[in-house]
Length: 97
Image 1 (cartoon, one colour):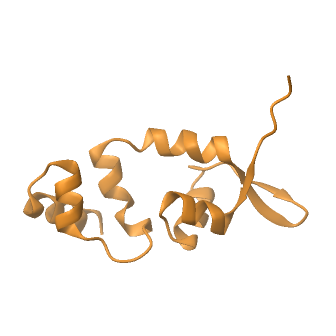
Image 2 (cartoon, rainbow, N blue to C red):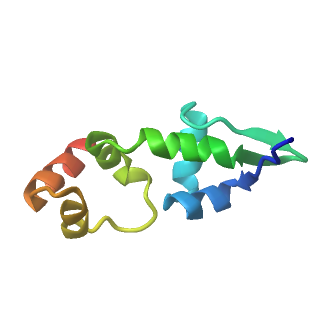
């Protein structure tokens, strides 16, 4: 059976992954995400974004993504989710700027 592949726009990827549109474009430019042009529009396979997201499940990599996230980073919330000290998270976020 053929599997139908879903393709997402840059804005759809941003919403799906919780990133800014500029952050998604940066990831494409940096070669982190494979994208293609279809009918003059940039598209990313959903399986590609899922693969990339799976690779990011690492505390250090997640913290490096803070500059590509859409909106402000809530240090307390990130620290709680990662079971880390808020000061340690803040230090790592500042180090990545």
